[in-house]
Image (tube, rainbow, N blue to C red; front, side, top):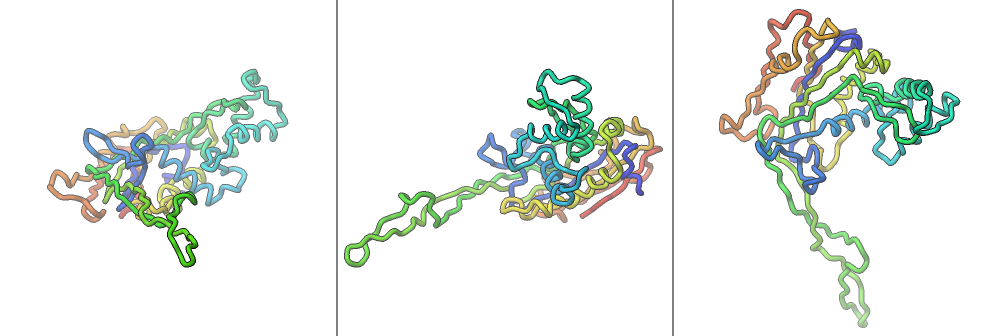
Length: 305
């Protein structure tokens, strides 16, 4: 077992990923345009977006197993129905807000044991059928692009029609009318030509102990960060890939060095400062300062390039 899969240790990590001619995370407040920082025009990808990809990967990989089910589904599964599973399994009756504290604690522990994303990310489960709240050991930041990105709103056309009345009636033989679909219906696609993003994350062994995280859970998480992109292909995210995952592991549960100081060892110089417009990952040089690490720190590179 390598050090980065030991759940009793603290881990801080940096994830690099990029996208070409796509939309990594649409903004519903901005017409689904790629999220950006309006001051710097750097691209943004939310932590929720990244966690959704991890959840989907785990669900595809082992979601039918008893201890790795996914709580937050993306296909209309009611949370109260999920919560009710705990009460049914423990032969308890749900009384909502009047639930006894010991019942809530039992239900919460059962949910942690059976749902991977609760065990790792935490959850608020007080929505009617009360299973309490869990603070997960893994926390992620927003991902931010190294350089500014250029959101494009591109017009597209289609020949398919939405409603029968949208068809154009044209004259045929014997004065009969036949329908002919319009060819001028328009649509939009939002994308950026290229963006290299950096996300940062933290794993707390203290919260992991409370939720029951095992080494296999942590190993599955690292695996998901690297492989989830292959299960998330779409027209807007066709060319999206991991470009680096760097895990700093601490011997001390409280940490052997500040996380921000460790993150500064992963350096990517913005190309904008050099007058270069990035269009591929090879345009960048990722410099990892892995010499003279603080005592008690181990750096593991799980993927590069």
